[in-house]
Length: 420
Image (cartoon, rainbow, N blue to C red):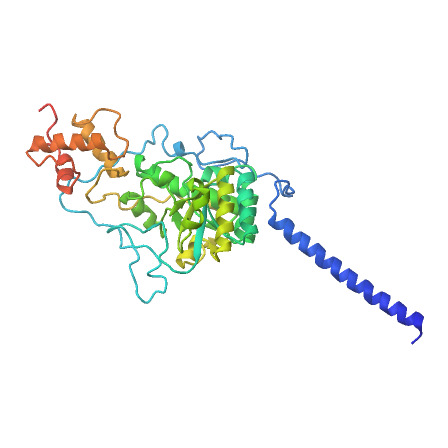
């Protein structure tokens, strides 16, 4: 072969090699671009989503994003007020919810998972019982696309997966659909329930409103994801109301695994003690703020340095990923009702935030033992003092404790008033 032919052949081979390298570079850049969830993503080619409402009488509220009307008051309007339900005064306990999953020694994650706090309750997930160097990092509320994107990108840099708890109203904000889709489908993050309203307190709501707050978040999340998404965990505002049996009953009926809490509030950790707060099975809570973002990065840097794997809550506790169903029109689903509304009387203690406490306070107000405006669902010293006065009126030991016997007596039709 002549030198000219050999040179031409080598030049052709070199050109092919350069062409292949160029293709690989373009593919790499495309992958990076997909992960970077930039706020300047090209708008979808399809027309803007129409205004969608579940209530023909509701007035759309500006959200700055998807105009999907899912407001709490859409479930009680003129002529449609939901009645407040009270416990049955019958001394015979009503049926309790079907038992939650119990300990199974043959299940490899049986000891890793927490157990229910009592009959009829689901577990509260605040830590995994494990020696494996695995932790879960959670982001609460997800208050906007830009800040959620920052948390996601920071996690990706450290090889971490986040568990996101967006409120339903925040999931509908401008740009959040794109961010959440990338987090779920490309980054393998986990999305869970944080109620529809960010500051909702379920223990102050009647049955229908409580159910609506949980269900509407699922609808909003499914709507922006484009698939019927089924969360495994519910996180409550401030962690308040986690021992509300009625909420646990509804969650169990809807297939939830439990209530999500946390081991440490990452945003309040001292910078110099982050390493000391690391332990296998911990769950870390972060809010959608710049300060918490900085603290999360410090935690992830320390965790990576100590050889920890940063996984989702499902992975930490050995559950399958949350189920998804395509082809389901979530806007045509009927809101599920709380089936077992007659919750049996159970012992309530100071500090409890429950619907049962709220009903007890309403009854104490009705009988004159508690002042108007004090039915907040929080079992405090004022509620205990009112109960003591009622117990003394009946000749019972004035303990101020809401034991089942006291509750049974206070809801009787002939319960004595304070002025009798």
